[in-house]
Length: 279
Image 1 (cartoon, rainbow, N blue to C red):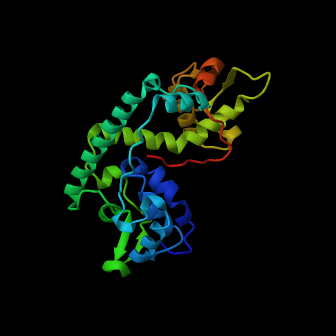
Image 2: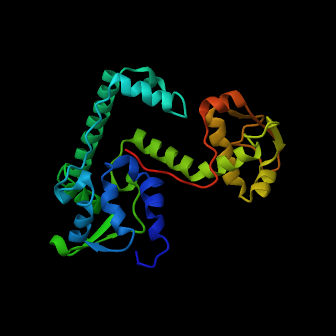
Image 3: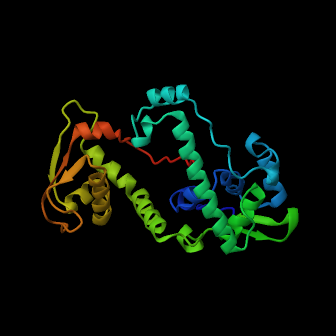
C-alpha cells in the first residue's frame, strides 16, 4: 500500500472490522496495525510506538492477551443499571462468579483455536505481541521485508479473509459470512429506519412500497435495500407482508414496525458509520 493510497486510512474498517479479523485476533493487534496506517515502518519503529502504551510497555515481549477482568457483583449491578441498551442476552442476570467463568471459558476456547491455527501456519503459539506479529504476517495481513529490527512492515491492501487464511470450522465460517453480510448492509438498514422517523411524535408504523421505490428514495440499488430490510426483519421488530427474499422489485408490500419491540431492541440510529473494535 503506497503512502498516498486513500485506502490506507480505511484499512482497519475494511479489513480488520468488516473483514472479520477483529473477531479472530486479540485486541493488542491494534497496537501493531495502528502505526502502519500512516505508512510503512520498521519493526523497531512499531515497537517504539507499542512501548508508549501501558498495555504493551514491554514492546514485542508484551502479553498478546489482555488479562480477563475479575468482576464483582456490585460492578455488574452498576454496569447493567448504567447501560443505555438494557439487557443484551440471557447472561445479563448472572452473578459475577458465573460471568467470570464464562469469560474464562471463552478465552480458553479462543486460545485453543489460535494455537491450532498457529500450528497450521507454522508459527509459535500466540502469547506475546511478537508472536502475534509473526501470526498476522503468516496470515497475509502484513508484509515484512528484511530481517530483525530493520525489517519493513506494511499493511496488505488485498488481505485475505479469515476463512481464506485459517482453517475455520464450517459453523464458524458460516457465522463469519453472516456477520460480514450484516456489517455490509447495516447502514442500509439504518436508512430504512430513518424513513419511519423514530423520534417523531406522530411516527408512522407502516409503509406501503416496493423495493424499487425504496431504492429510488434512498438512492441505493434494489439488492442493498432488500438486504437492509431483511436485517431489520431478522431483528424481530420489523415485518413485511411479503417474503422479501423472493419479492420482485416492482411488487407492492407493507413494511411494518413494532415500536415496542423496537424500543426493547434499543436500535441505535446512526447518521454516520462508526464502529469501535473490542475483544
